[in-house]
Amino acid sequence: MTALPSLLAAALLLLSFGCAAKSPQAAMTDPLRQTAAPRPAAAPRPAAAVLSLPDEVWAGEPFLAKVQAPGLTRAVVSWRQKSLAATPGTGSQPEDSALFLLPVPQKEEASSLPLSLSLTFADGRRETLTASLPVRRRVQPEQRLTVADRYVRLTPAQLARVKEEQREVREVLARVSPVRLWRLPLLRPVPGKVTSVYGLRRFFNGQERSPHRGIDFAAARGDPVPACADGIAVLIGEHYYGGGTVILDHGLGVFSLYLHLSGFAVSRGQTVRRGQIIGFAGDTGRVTGPHLHLSLAVQGELVDAAPCLEGMGNLSETEERPGRGAPEKSQSPAGGKGEAL
Ligand SMILES: [Zn+2]
Image 1 (cartoon, protein in one colour):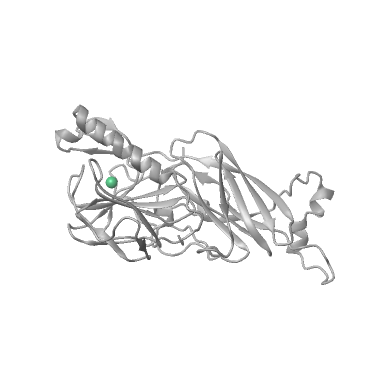
Image 2 (tube, protein in one colour):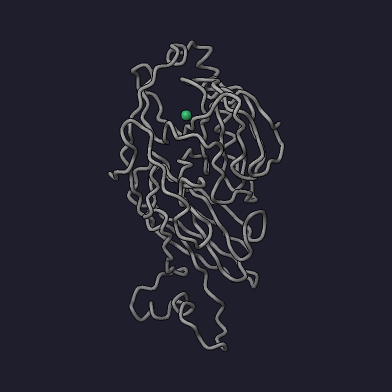
């Protein structure tokens, strides 16, 4: 698994406040620049907001947007026609800051995407920050699998079941709980090596099917599976493809999904803590053997969890720079996704 440092080197953006500063003279009076350089203590101007973003984003991956400003009471981010509101000081949001995990769908075709943030402050001030993020893409490796024929050729009844399960999952993942419970990095749920990366183009019994929307970890039947972050169990079920399935809601549109479980250790509606056992690895559903499939859903999009996982990715919510451990090598036959298109 490669997690490119370029994604993670969060760029400190100098921002436009409502209308962008165009001329060099105007830039000199940018409130952020004034804040960056120490000013006399008598200056009455409130400290400006600082937005941290990656300098580019990758199709199929989540990224972190962080805004920090003294007196910040509410931040609303607009990204891909969706708005998401955060309240500093609630859940895992620090005071005076708001962190958002945002998705770039694997199928995203735009060369860049706009992001805007509307900020409200304790003194009633409002500000809008805007940025444009270039979107990059990777070559997706392929995987060929042989599974029982019933997973490739569905009867009408099986097809109806699959469609109903997909509808239920989509509905769950579209919800947005207003309080952020997740923290980065997410806990890697099992220590086993990665056997299939996110984004693999998959051929089942020679036929191309939907790409892999999660990470497979080697695990034995019965291995305990912990929650990757604090959350609430919002779906527990036996699905046709996913087998024993648990979905945890971590707030602000972030969910983790655990598939092919042989047993459950939580019930629907239960609050769980990071590291708490939520179930046991298995080989239920459409599998070639026991393993754990982990998916990450962000604002309804299944994105690669690897950048968020402890020891695998480098998405961090502190100022700390990458270096939590060497990125894991892909186990995929095509050698991973290191190349950019
Ligand atoms: Zn999988």
